[in-house]
Image (cartoon, rainbow, N blue to C red; front, side, top):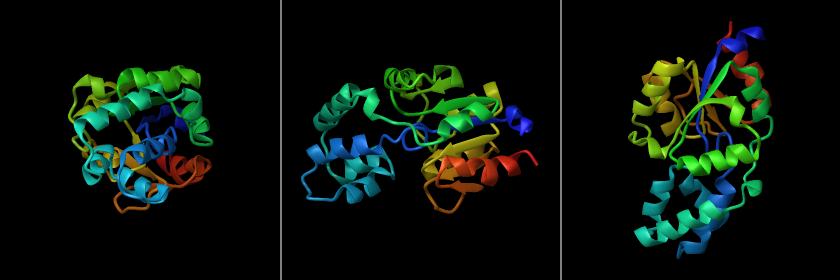
Length: 197
């Protein structure tokens, strides 16, 4: 599939490239007052981090403590999803848009030896409005001509639609995406083949 080398993919970070949800779930469980299962906490978290903060009524001080725990979390305990590296290697260019602070995103990427896979990383430090506002995607599209956006939530792909890119939801079946995959081995059959037809 040599045509894949012409594609630029814009990736979300948390829950798309790296399975950070176990970390976030564990951190939230330390601070929420409700007696909830990990699955119940995860369901709220998957809407968005700040949605979970509001639902669980967490204070600014508490969020600051949680952010500190996140910074101290070993990168070795934050694993990429299986086979995602195959996709990174197969396409022409990869860019990231994440609300994480740059130092945290780069710490995890560097630990896994993935720095060379990414042509650009836009982070929460870059001053763009939060997703689903498309400003950060518009910036990346102007610089790199984004063909495909991959994320695990609707708010990841809505800005992709705004820039005219194809969209793929990972482990999420909500309506609105062009493609759906539950495992990155499915990318080549369900997404790549159709993108390069």
